[in-house]
Length: 152
Image (cartoon, rainbow, N blue to C red; front, side, top):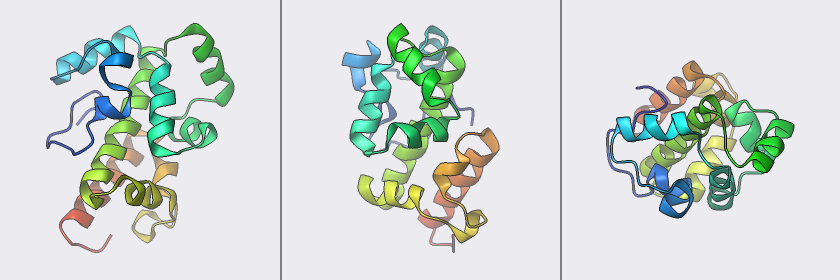
């Protein structure tokens, strides 16, 4: 699934909730096409604040996870919007967090898992792989295996 697509199964914590919901996004995306439109417009930078507030990730952890330098994030904060590519990366992170919360049935447990080294992922933290599409696919696959009770 592309980073812009909505999750296939409902999550207890929706992607739009992680990004600040309607007050931040000005809409609630209901389909993949809605997300694409939002990405192309650029997500407001206040979505970063909402995500860090809910996940307790530091700004540097978030910056590394989405592959955007902290200085660039600070500049975007002043500008008020992320670029479409940056928006896509932020949504990718929110999708993984939402999926982790769904699998572990607890946001704190999901964040702890994302920050912990994982043998199934070559001994690195899942969070460190989210700066690439392929890394994100590996993390999502691992979450799927955990959900199915397969060693991950």
